Amino acid sequence: MSFEVIPAIDLRAGRVVRLRRGEFGDETSYGDDPRSVAVRFANAGAHWLHVVDLDGARDGSPAQVDLIRGLIDVVAERVSCEVSGGLRDAAAVNDALMAGAGRVVVGTAALRDPAFAADLVATHGPDRIAVAIDVRDGRAVGQGWQTGASGVSAAEAMARLRDAGITTFELTAIARDGLLEGPDLDLLAQLVRPESGSVIASGGISSLADLRAVADLGCTGAIVGRALYEDRIDLGEALAWASRVA
Image (cartoon, rainbow, N blue to C red; front, side, top):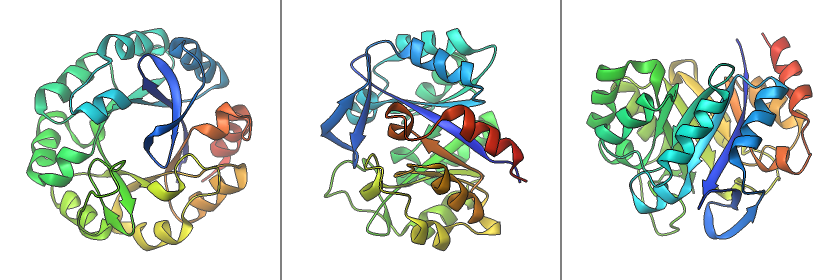
């Protein structure tokens, strides 16, 4: 089994930020030059970048299209980028892929309507479509930053979407996201199964030990954000470790 360490670049109003528990009122800024951050991660040897349009996620449609296209362009020869945030219709997904995204990550729209996910897979293929499963209190929620958002159980959501043809899931424990307190290993242990497809862990990753722990549970990758920006994890070291995972 290969394992991908995927640096996150979360964008809000053109800045690189990280949110705590997905809350827009609790953010930390890490600079206003996303392209330089992307180049730094590329220079360290990353294979994938996780690029999030936070404004698009909140507003329901892509809001930083030109910025993301430019970021993709500057690293396109070395790194694949997956793009998420506000991709709630077929046109927005197609635009992101045409802008150079190697994969798109849809969330709210797919959770509400698995048939939407099925149509995307039929059009673009399963390798180019992933679904974000944001989990709060065991339930997969759309618009996960809204504490009142309701949803079905995470296991049920994943089963529905597997039936729709989704093979890659990005699983975030909202209560851990951005806190550097470690991943929710209990949640991952419940949901990572041979039949689950590829599960990428997100939320709380703070150390190389955390990466080892989610890999041991069968995850195929992990999205890492704040731990990289605050030098808790050396990306080069993490990538070197991941290259030895089999």
